[in-house]
Length: 120
Image (cartoon, rainbow, N blue to C red):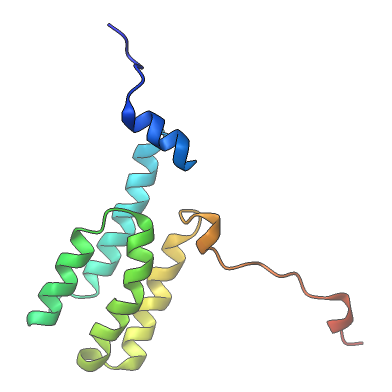
């Protein structure tokens, strides 16, 4: 019996340049669930079609990237019911949870201050 037999999924991961599932997958899943729960928590106490739809989209998001893109939809769903200030506070609270979990293409570039920008 081979524990690590090659299969189509592993080959597909190699072709796409994605990480293979590894022992760190559990840690990544924990981060994903932490973000998901924080986003769902912001919908607590609200009801209606839009809330149910947003809740389902959050629950069934397959990866951290999907949750990243759902932040805007969550904001737009919360604004009419809780106001823009509260919706922005939710976004400000949820966004740091993504730190270290997003691929490089989705991270905001960290630009060091230019030396000319210093004031004496």
